[in-house]
Image 1 (spheres, rainbow, N blue to C red):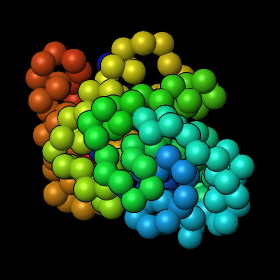
Image 2 (tube, rainbow, N blue to C red):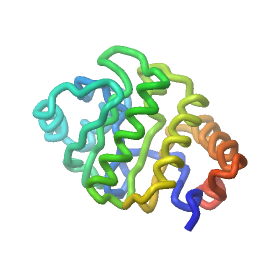
Image 3 (cartoon, rainbow, N blue to C red):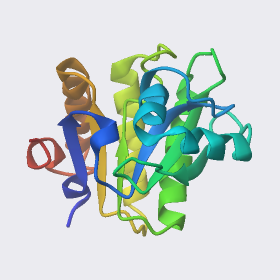
Length: 185
């Protein structure tokens, strides 16, 4: 199986994914306020916030894992691409994506679903986010990993289109083949 067959791009609701882990677009204080984090708290229950409180603050660019509470996903990996109330940087996005993938592999998870980290409240550019996250995922998949399927669950058609473009650009560079078409539903 080539790298591209392990990447699936979909328009949908991250909190409805039946995967081993979903990734939260987190702040480094792990406060589940608005956006993706708020949706995770509402659907997954307050137990996720309690677990985040027990973890405490993590470095920007880091990630931490909690259970999935009442979500279909067994775990939530909180990728801290910003400070509470702050903005996301390319460096923090790259690092938090890589950390989330490492945590998933360390836990021997087989499936993970990402949103477009940092593009909501934190205001990061969707096209740049797509390129950074896709590159990190492709680099991760070049090494031994337990991950068999990595989903990008995008909140609207324009975001999905940007991730499809980023995949196509990286695939054209010889890094992989086929995810945009093979993985679309």
